[in-house]
Image (cartoon, rainbow, N blue to C red; front, side, top):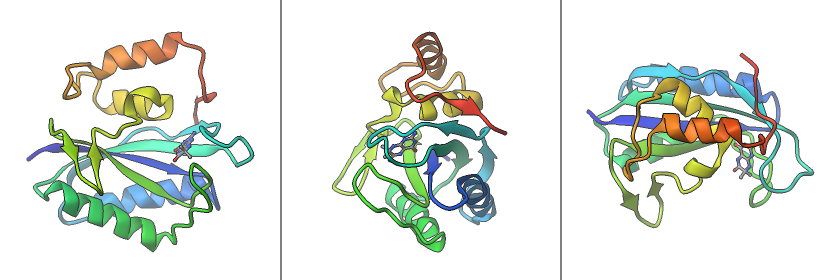
Amino acid sequence: MPAIYIGMGANLGDPLLTLQQAAAALGQHPELHQVRCSSFYSSSPMGPADQPDYVNAVVAAESSLPPHDVLDLLQQIEQQFGRVRLRHWGERTLDLDLLLYGNDIIRTERLTVPHPGLTERDFVILPLAELAPDLKLPDGQTLDTLAAAVKTAPSAHDLQKIT
Ligand code: ROI
């Protein structure tokens, strides 16, 4: 069963509670196994600065669902939480991104895996490295190496662990 990693982000309503509930919903899903959640981090917005800070976390799981079925289930959970997205790169109630699906490289109209922002976003790399420090991306980079680079660079998004 491939290991899958899901990035979670929110900055409207009560974003910490939303992410905790989304992680619980993923944990209870019958098609997702061995579900684990990283720490929760606050981060200043990437994109327009006139929006609230984000809460971010990453969930790891194993699943035999094909990638587009995983995407469907993530979009269903976003809808359950009344996903509101006000503008491109703007504030949202809940964002669930399929970051990695095993070692697969996927490029379809609906889905790009690995997630294109993954290697540039400290708010994705650090929680992901917490769950899977030895993980290798399809291009051979390890998460530990990416995390070390993020930690030596000045934090672009003022990332803080909250819980
Ligand atoms: N910025 C932060 N800090 N965290 C996010 O999850 C996030 N998600 C987004 C954009 C708008 C790019 N900015 C973000 O989709």
